[in-house]
Length: 185
Image (cartoon, rainbow, N blue to C red; front, side, top):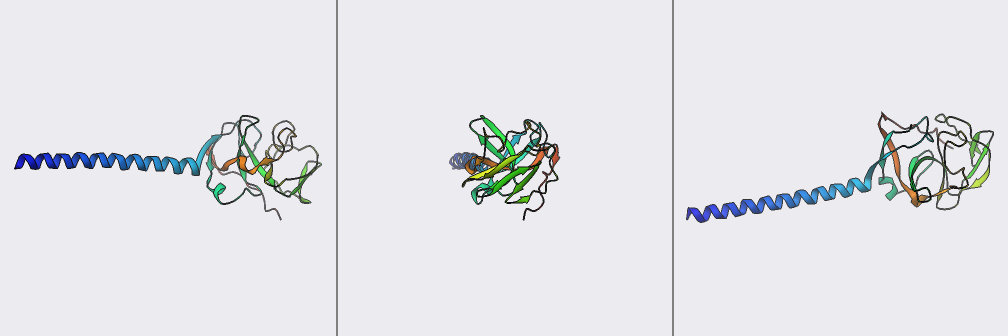
């Protein structure tokens, strides 16, 4: 009688361990899916976002807003550019329907100059561009000619909203917040 009880208890214990490992594996898979679709990590390459972000910064990327909205003014976004073959990190300064003009180094959106305290360099003039539906006008914070491949460059132009992979939330290394613009009215 005792021998049968020991075998039965041992089988229950083994079954419990197997179910424990299955639950653990399912939980890890669910956690991976949530993290993969809600957050990400990317590295800054180049100087196009100086002084806000420097070459080599490691960024935490937030993907959650992609499910319920579109990028807006001042957002720093990570964009997958198939033509370039890698990700670029830029600031949104124009959304669909906006009129973007650069005169004497000042960027105007819908006739209003942008109040930008986070930039370096001076942008070259650009004739007025109207941002097409479903697209964004993005620029690097380093406005010096040749430092940033962004929407000012005809080879890139406005980027499609669907090419946005996420939002740069914070620099993890070195740890700091990302500068945001003053309110655009």
